[in-house]
Image (tube, rainbow, N blue to C red):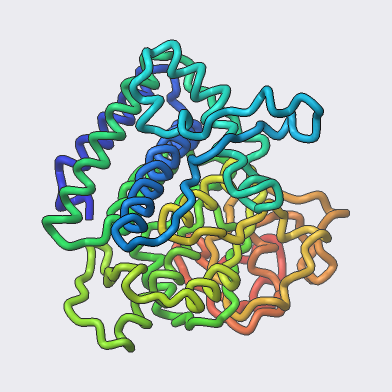
Length: 380
């Protein structure tokens, strides 16, 4: 609830201003770089908390930062061990103490490659992070960003303790505010859907645990998160959880950790699926869901209008805000479409085999879309 915490909002504005003045003015680029740093910070914090909890409970815990890590390019070689890096040195709490030049080199050549590889070579996250790059150009910018992010986390922790809101939810709010800057980027029809619109759409379709839910043009994953929050809240209400409050957009807020069993969490991770044709949006969507507590999000790089997409009958609910510009090569259009057009905004609301479909079309809602549009010139 950032509107109720001017200190937190001010810190985030400071972070934006530092990136702008540091030479990274494109919102998408800035968000990606900030997200990497947020991940590094959160990864260390969570690991230390898990380690402390395990020690208190007398349980065994293997830290993510224990032992050594060999970069992928050296694995399988006879002399691979000589390139091993102590994971302990990759912690946020370790590298933030370094001098500016040393810190930048360390994060660029060691910490960031470790971040890309952290979920294992076969994970969806690692696959999509393969081509990600760390491009903070100036040592001073990195130092200032690290300092500001530390301050942001301190405010989040304070807010969590004083107001009883789950830290994970506050962290999600912070990330949502960062992502709101994408509205100023506006490339290729990529605009974030306002959260109150997402809330209304979730209430209209009322997703339930076990429903297979997809967003064929997911961007940063807002609709998947809307469905996720709706389901989690309904589970909390059914479990008798009281005192749930609405945020500024009307979402009833509840801690994910307090309401989800491991089985329910697994089901949600397997049934929320997103696709996008922009690699940077796929990465942002993955990180957005991970920031909100979904450990292994199912977001993939794919053109859902093309012949390569054949999963349209796999889902129970589709929620989307399709791009309003662009076209697709006529020879690559999926054969299930009956519209004679190459415009993506029309194809997205063409005939599909979904049981429930809800799209935003300009400023209107379309439910149960099948053959509403007949020509390129048709408008709702």
